[in-house]
Image 1 (tube, rainbow, N blue to C red):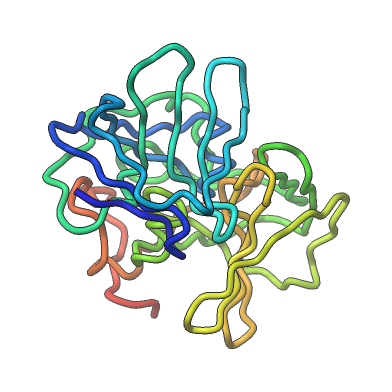
Image 2 (cartoon, rainbow, N blue to C red):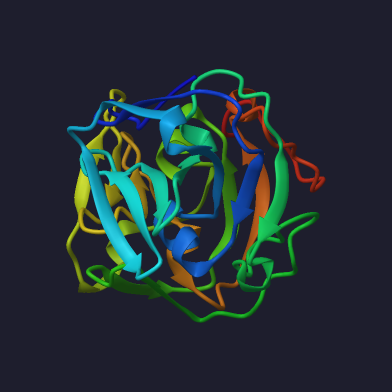
Length: 253
């Protein structure tokens, strides 16, 4: 089975059996993916890097390194110290996986704009939103509340986030940057995806028509947001189901 980042700067092959998927809601995974991460795992001898020109590693803790593509910002790999296994993003895998989500980790620190399983929580109050990347090289604030959040299951968002994306619309001019160190990946359609080149955290999306959205996972609680709809569900991964009862759309309405 083959997996890759969005731009092709990192490509890998994995041999079965693959562990079923763990969905992780820890702060680090939410910062880096822009929502929350979902990963399978294989022994090292079942994992082979085909292309690594874009591969960068960020050590977020003494226990593990996090691998991402420095060219497009896709969050791909998690390597714990002293283990002969590597975790890889389920959203990076091409084609059907035959896997399913077996458990949710760190649900107690999930973002307040969604629930790890089931319907989203009621929105909290938030007058000002504060966001940052995982390493702190990017910090910003903007007026709250977050409001409606879109969960996007398109192939681009799944490749970049490692699972699926969650973002909210805002005006780019409303962002007040206290620290800014951003790289942008320009897609074939002319949109721009902003990310931190040091830690790989997804930050924002600027569409070709100028509309702008921020990744919900980089905002520190409370947000005043709530997931309201799933979009591009025709492209969703086969390893998860959408069972929260929210509206679903083939595109974006």
